[in-house]
Each structure stands twice: as C-alpha cells, then as structure tokens.
Image 1 (cartoon, rainbow, N blue to C red):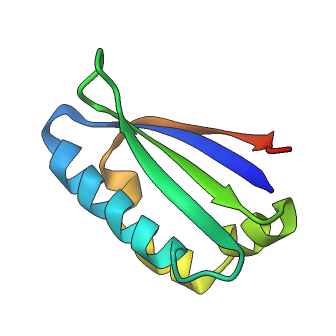
Image 2 (image 1 turned 180 degrees about the vertical axis):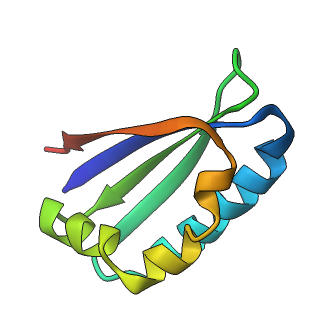
Length: 94
C-alpha cells in the first residue's frame, strides 16, 4: 500500500474553484480500482493551500490512475486555478 501526499496552491480568488475541482477528482478516484481512501487537508497557515493524502493499493495502480481518462476529465480545468505547480510525494505504508 502507498500514500500519495499532494500539496496544491490556489490563486487567491480561485480557492473555492480549486476545492471543487479537487473534490471532483476525489470522487472520481473513489471509483478507481485500487483506491483505498482520500483525506483533504487545509493548511492552517496558508488559506490557498489544499493538500490531499490518498491511499492506493500500489504504485502501479496509482500510475494507472494518473494516466486514466477519468483523471484527465476530473482535472480538466485545474491548471487555471493554481498559483504554482502541485508538489507530490509517495510513501510506503507498511
């Protein structure tokens, strides 16, 4: 099992739109094979930062999700809301 921690930073006036896009992505993820759980994290110090921790069965399953049409559709308009590129890291879960 792996965890993927991703940090997103929305433009000041796009936080609600960013939340909507990420929530839609989470809904799509929840239907993907190998998805386990997703938690949204809102920064206490930066109101534009929205992070997510998503658990997947394996790296291969996550890679398949990243290349899937469902993900592309869910994240279609995402680039217009970010103030900087998202940062993501994978973790092994023993």
